[in-house]
Amino acid sequence: MMSDFGKFLDAFTPTEVAVKVKTVGVDKANMPFVSLIILSMMAGAFIAFGAMYYTVTITDSNMAYGMTKLVGGLTFSLGFILVVIAGAELFTGNTLVVMAWAKGKVSLPALLKNWSIVYIGNTIGALVMVYLVYLSGYLDAHHHEVGVTAMKTGLSKVDNTLTESFVLGLFCNVLVCLASWMVYASRTVSDKVLAILFPISAFVAMGFEHCIANMYMIPVAILASMDPAVVAASGMDASQLEALSLSGFVANIVPVTFGNIIGGGVFVAMAYYLVFVFSSPSAD
Image 1 (tube, rainbow, N blue to C red):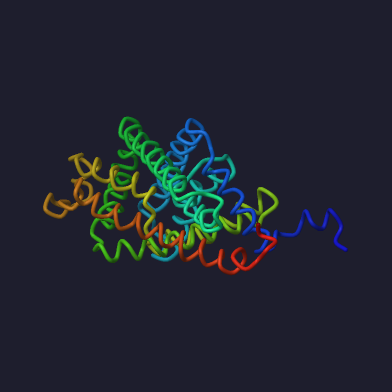
Image 2: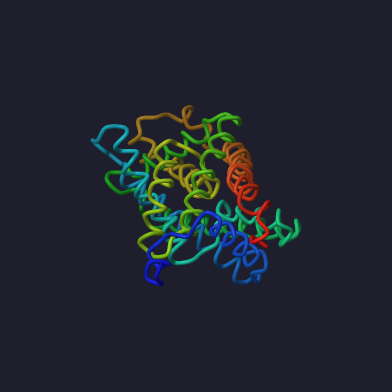
């Protein structure tokens, strides 16, 4: 028989994680509005911090392409570490609430209400960070090269087709929700950090699309494109930046959001629901 100390060190089993995810999903769906909206705005800001760290890290990098992407992905993971360890409500992670809905513990209106509030709160948090970044002069760092990196990062996102954005969003949230799943399996803070690092850095390195990260990264790119000094430092002209617009932003966010929902809600939550909850009486 395993000792209490042994249980503390050992990760939760997948079946135990499924029960935790379902139970936490009920708690999320029933969270008071004020708590939910504040924690959602914080999550949007936390993801923006990760994106800011990523932007500085890859600016003027002399490393090989893959290594630059790897380091950038690891630094971007800051945002998710803050969400999990400090505590916040992130839309993409909340697609796992589908498991509680599938089990009949959360109604469809309650699920959609949770998603709507969290999505709006995440958006507000991310956009507030965009404005504060603009006021801070952050984009002017390293002879405007940080602004150039931010602008080019956003441009690469709005240049994707609708299909590409959807599939990249799907891939992204499979990894994000698998990271969340492994966090639920963890027992210590260090376990949780390690569970986050590889899936999150992987989705960033491979260029997958996260709707809340894009709520910061595309608007800040649009602001950077309006700064003549940043545009001059980039060596690009106005015709190359036309996609950095409100319409370009919407054309990215909509398919990425739906891709994130399918990736997390179907490919992870429903898959594990069928395996560990649907056929298990003990999962009630």
